[in-house]
Length: 316
Ligand SMILES: [Zn+2]
Ligand SMILES: [Zn+2]
Image 1: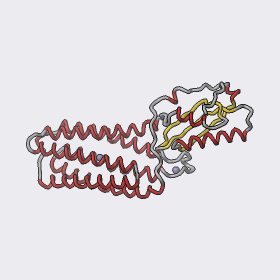
Image 2 (image 1 turned 180 degrees about the vertical axis):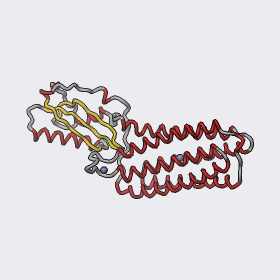
Image 3 (image 1 turned 90 degrees about the vertical axis):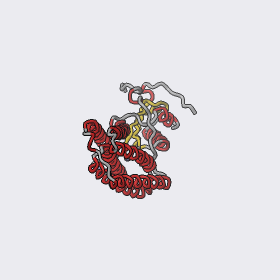
Image 4 (image 1 turned 180 degrees about the horizontal axis):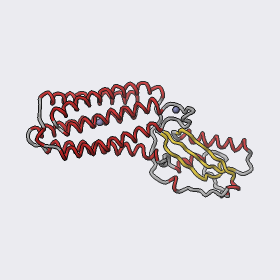
């Protein structure tokens, strides 16, 4: 065999830890919590939109856009649990996890556009229009109450279900409460004769939305460009625990949703027969699956002499 070993390029890049697989039994509960979150976020979105339109505050409008992103996020989480976790079928033999990746990428693009729109609107607007009304302030206090109880409730369910998704959601909702407080302060200051406070708060919200978009891009782009998902050295160590393996020509991994797809070229003694080689390949696959959250493990076996591979002593 003359193919060159590309040990460098595919194995470079940042190694990202993968989150463990969610247990199937909890999915129903997590799904219910996400549905309730989504409804609360939708209600909050409507309240903020009413206040923004009635008072002319761009900061509150920005906060409404932020709520829109929260609703969309809940939608993505829903897609992940309902669609992405489905087993492979004839049309999608590698599973459905990339539906999540596409949804996250689309959401990140949407957030980026909305953040720039919001920034432009904040800068170009007529500063004299912002008004204060008692009922609008009342609605915003309602928003704060809903979000505070939502965050507390999410944190409780996150602990009960030991769900990373819900834990992250709870943290995010607490951050939303702080954002809304800043927005209310900006709007109130603007309505009392300091219009620039509303612009500053709106620009702050735009930055928050951009940061959210950046986080989403970081989640989906490594998957889209097949970045290395598991530490190649740890993978190689795992392969060398299998007796009969005398060398490893390549280890590659890429993320597939929250799991990894791994392919390995292992070198064995040339005089082994097919049954013996196959047994070693199966052992390698098992060694990888035991240690890493994997979607698929593909093992290619090469004979030592034909590969021109120098014997490598096992470390144990
Ligand atoms: Zn939010
Ligand atoms: Zn399908």
